[in-house]
Length: 278
Image 1 (cartoon, one colour):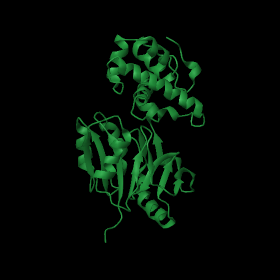
Image 2: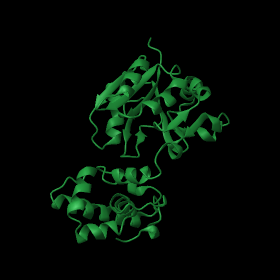
Image 3: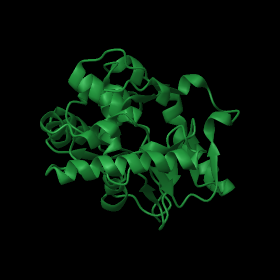
């Protein structure tokens, strides 16, 4: 009889070798294998993952602005089987070796309690593989099919030293504004819900502005879902409609002021009173 296995899964692209090593090296022997989606083009990061994949698989794919689709490659094309567990964090997050070495025991214990999912600081962290398991949502994907979950940071077992998020210390201070703009034009983005989950009317307003923005970019003959194309469009055709949208949405306003005006007074807060009209 095949024994249940645990897997470490993830998504990455070129230029992340350092982050992959810092994330995986301390816990590389804590899983049956790695199952990773690597977006073309390949680089040394792909070679590194291949060297440590164990019983897993590195899956290569083109990036298409759909993060849940990329993550589902690991579920649908890897060696996971029903009843296995998979664990996942992002490249800018770290799991301690002590925590990693306990994950198989945790999975076994949760199976006995009928628990099939784990959240870590409110974010999807692990799940038991079932027929209905999939990643859903772009770019903030959850895991569907979970029927009973725990928040592991609320357990007696938890230690703060088990997990670290290094985003703030490892990237340029303006990177978050570029990422937000990329997320803004993702197909079926759910990024506009962030921090406004209880204000349905305001969320609807934001999506209306987004639709107007994308429609205007498209009408002008550019690809509204490609950031380079959006940048070229605005550089050549800053219409009144685009200006109205930029003055109504903080993500657009931050990105435009940084990209075209060289502004460095951007504030990473979801506060629309900080918009500076152009």
